[in-house]
Length: 293
Image (cartoon, rainbow, N blue to C red; front, side, top):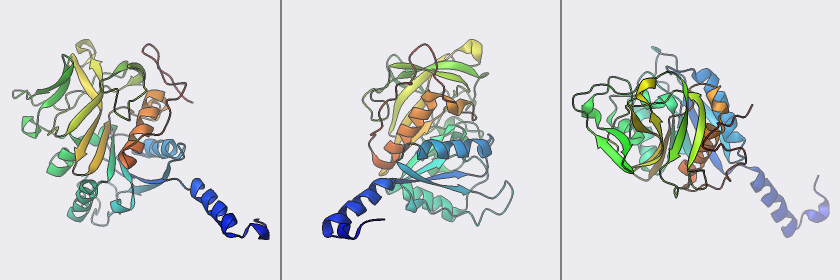
């Protein structure tokens, strides 16, 4: 209880300041409900990872099951600083799609997590928002492959290839930072290891206003294209900030500090345009992954 002599203008100011400090500065919405991956297991971990930063109050919007009436699915995107997409499934209602596009165009933040890059292959605005997508029978008409070659982004139209989105068997891989000055990657080691995971390749799309932050080499003898594939990148869509993080197939991969830190920093940047989180002492170096149990 506050003492009576605290109920002065100064005392009230101190009390209000303490309450303000206790309240997370940002609100986040995780969207799930359908996915070719195990969203029921990953969404609770994503929520925990956001909350443990102390920066986010987190809600979850879960869609109806696949094949059910989607007309009732109408999240209030505008009420949040960042939307984390853990969704890949049936189309949203037109009203919901418009609300999402308006939210991002108006300055809303988005984090596309792992297999959400496979959602909505025929939704033009979504493909522009996420920059690059995979699976969903996307073809060269959707846009080029994006790779990192000779120290810069390479746009590969691959007109004879209809392959979009693939990966070899789960494998450990090293990420290489390509933009060390971006707030998300600033201060991270130039190279760092990630645990056994799906190494996404052959992602293609409009790739407008896209900045590659980190890549990983996908060796051909392990099911890859023999290319440096973009696994962490940003897209500017209208006033909105979008980050795609391709790491994190299942809860086991979400224990990787490489995923945890890049996800947490991506969410803060998408929400605010800045990153205040320090690089933790257990962040991995170039040779060995780091895991939190």
